[in-house]
Amino acid sequence: MSPNTPDSPPASPSSLDRQLAPLDARRSVPARQLDAPAPDAATLARLLRSASRVPDHGKRVPWRFITMRGDARHAVGDRLAALTASRDPQAGEGAIEKDRQRFSHAPLVVTVVARLEPDDKIPAQERLLTAGCVCFALLQAAQAAGFAGTWLTGWPAYDPTVHEWLGLAEHETVAGFIHLGTPGIDAPERDRPDPDALSTEWRAP
Ligand SMILES: Cc1cc2nc3c(=O)[nH]c(=O)nc-3n(C[C@H](O)[C@H](O)[C@H](O)COP(=O)(O)O)c2cc1C
Image (cartoon, rainbow, N blue to C red; front, top):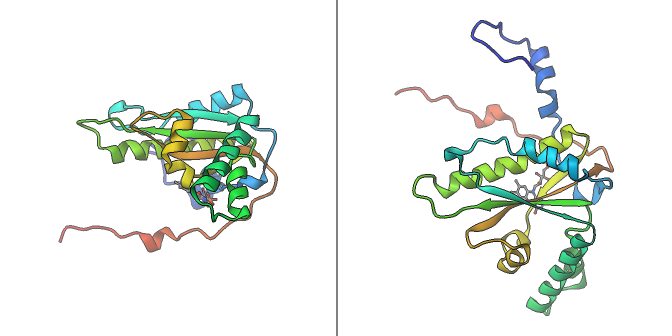
């Protein structure tokens, strides 16, 4: 993609559409439809390099990654199921099994951890937004490389016990569990919001 310069003519709609096609094609594939193979270690390292090119006020680098593959996914699912059963004796078999399977569908789960230590200058909100950008950039990188993914959270993302299992420090939280694999379906498009309906132009009164 060539950079726009003040001298370059405005792109025609069709060339602009072509330029934006990879971004416009971005969509999630549900975790159940994420098959093996996942990106291997070297490929994932490369994807994470792209995903780490995010706006970052103050260069705080407020994120880190935890990868989970193979039996580790099932182990955390077993723990989630046990936790749900112990906390809620009324929990149905369906809810318990849902928790057991949470990390088992996709062959790879990358936890994007937001690091939100006390900071005098950069608000925590901005650092959390940066970690969110990493999640999104990882989805885009995976799709650009022929893989697919989905960004999930659910209660485990906010649970102190799960944080402990993952080894999160006091000021860390989960920005997202990015489930990654090879798309098992051509995911259907969903309705997208109309940006015109969301846009206004401010003018000085
Ligand atoms: C922070 C965050 C957390 C999400 N958590 C869940 C979740 O736990 N379960 C779920 O079904 N979708 C969740 N989603 C939505 C999906 O990731 C996805 O965006 C949605 O299915 C729409 O698909 P699209 O990415 O193709 O637009 C979450 C999205 C975000 C941004």
